[in-house]
Length: 216
Image (cartoon, rainbow, N blue to C red):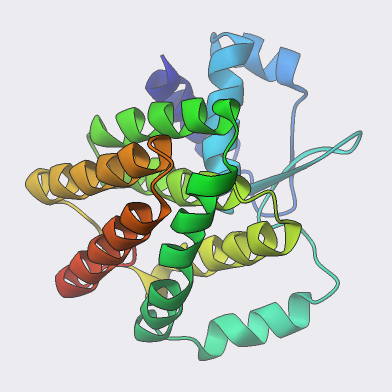
């Protein structure tokens, strides 16, 4: 299952003392080393990529850390000057509209991935697992917009959210369960192609998260 593949992958990275910039082995070899299927490995890699912990380039391989960008110095400066409250305010302005757009533009494949991700999020048993599926959930909504600029912005937001100073742990299982229910409400609205409700549910979710004090 994807959770065991993710746990195994994280353990592999720690065991080999890999750091940002280091390359992971090719998928086939890595799957063999971890004793998981390539499908399970790809789901684990997708979760790490969505959280900004790895990046993959066609023909280039998979590397730890954030994707190199020409504007990296500007992004680094942005991270150093941005508080959790700043991120929460930006997301409250941006993501409800994005959920509404996803309701109009999501493909059947997008909808299927969103449903699967929401289910994985709901069964998360640890903060780290929760964060990975949560970040993938919000990125999937951005990807459903079919707008490269919006997707890039969501990737930047996720990159800022993984900074240690930008978040606290969601250790309370009951709170994680409540947030997962809110995620499902967003998915249900997108599935129904109800952009207004999707936007409202996203706004309610982000306001609840702000009240809890954590950037999910």
